[in-house]
Image (tube, rainbow, N blue to C red):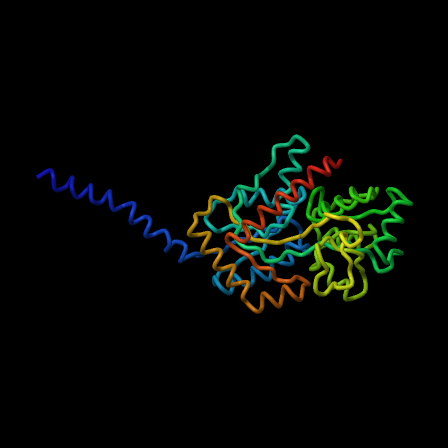
Length: 329
């Protein structure tokens, strides 16, 4: 008489793990059932914001749920990046990260600080853009070529100011790479993000900045700004007349400001796959493609193993650059 209930209990216990495994994909299939926040670690107007908004709009059409873009700025992006690294892995919080994501922890170690996050706390989901940065100056500036800019900087040490998104951020590191290679003394004026840095350039507070093509394209079209060089390995469409730093003799100076979606590393594999599929669908959305193009951003979509490999290689290259530049007070 006792064997039957024991046998039934044993069968139920053995079946429980299989039931759990069978249910896991349905959780991802039903995702999301509520709003999904997309965090940008900088103020509105910068590269992360410019890419996040059309992608979020595309995801809203796919998911039929709100995807608010939330700015959590500060500490060169460290605050926003760390907030997602520590978030629950339930898909409710995503990050539109920039290339600075890879270098902020290494920069913290240069100063003997414990990083607020490590990159292995974030899981790459999908890359949307990967553009070289450009050296932008006001159209009224006296420099029409990179050589003129460098010659003036050398003649007047510390006189030319440039803005950035913060120390070791996505707009600071490329300029630091150039000033180190060219032995220039420029005045660095850090802001909390690319939007305020661009405002400072447009208002004449500074004489130069680096930027991805998206935020500066409207001002290039209006004739307010001009670009003198790019950090790309080759010239890109739309900027065919702009020379690369490598063309101008700075071998190995290469930097891309990319924008990609990350989830907390604790996000289960089935949910990561559901996120990846949604990102791929958003990348195919003609409205998303048009919005990115209108903002001066070429879609360079990669996901899965392709994005993971891209992120691994770029992280290694940027960490070496930070170590080479060293501490910047």
